[in-house]
Length: 153
Image (cartoon, rainbow, N blue to C red; front, side, top):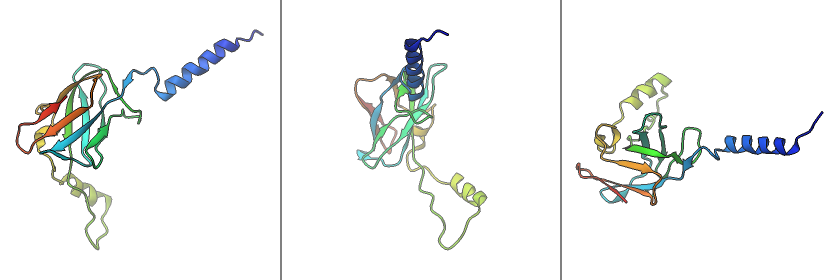
């Protein structure tokens, strides 16, 4: 029986890099979300592909408004392409004091939460934000309470 140690090593390295995300074409993508000049904490930033076959990705903002994009498997980065950028944040869901809720009651209450940000940022047909990945700079999303937002370079 012939042994091919180099072939086995190459196969193992190839499989390992595929499992860790190397070679998948992910590009690091970071940014900041502000509303009327103030950082937005706990907002969901979703990158919706404008190209056929693209993959949605996104991130959650920290207290300072910064976010880092990842794909659904938790791997950091976004695939190359053009994206609409959606930003949403719902009011917190707090349990009623002194009452135990069923899962159904909690889901109903969760579905009735209101948006903390203007709705037009959360919809693909009304968002003013678009970007192309890769980018040379972080994506600064400057939201406004009135419809005059900008995507800073």
